[in-house]
Length: 188
Image (cartoon, rainbow, N blue to C red):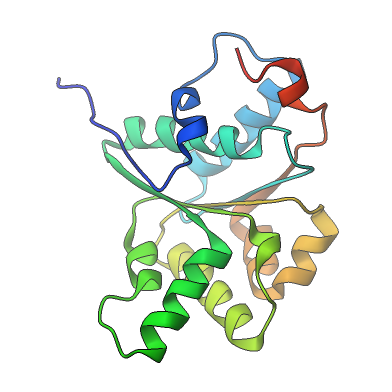
C-alpha cells in the first residue's frame, strides 16, 4: 500500500511539522481530549467537533493532528483548513464582483474541513446564515467539520444556534482549558 500524500490546504506553516500524533502528550487530559474528539469523528457520520479555549492551548495543532489521522484512516488525501472570517470575506468579495468559483462551495465539498478562529467573524445575518448553512450542509452530506475558536462552550451557542443544535446531535465540544502549550514548548 502506498503512503497517503497529505494535502494540508491552508494549514498554518508554523504548525505543519506537528500534523502527526505526538510521541508524548503533555498530560493525560490532552490525550483524553484527543481520543474523545477522534471517537466523535469516527463514530458519528457528519460529526461537528468544536475545539474551544484560550490562545496558545494547542487547538489548531490538535485539529491538524485529528485531520491527518482521519485522512489516513479514510484514504482521503485532502482536507482543508480555513480561517472562518477570511473564508467569509472571500465569499463576499466573489459575490460582490460576480466572480465564479465560490470558496464556500469548495469548503463544503472537502472530505474534512477545519474552520479556525470562528470568534473572528462580524456576526452579520449573512455571515450567521452562511456559516450555519456551511456546517449544517456538510453534516447533512456526512462530511466531518472541526471548528476551532478562542471562546467557551456557552459562546459557541451564541455564535450559531443552528450549528450548536447540530453539534449536540452529531458532535462534541472539547474545552481546551489546560495550560498554555507555547510556554510548555508545544506537543512533543
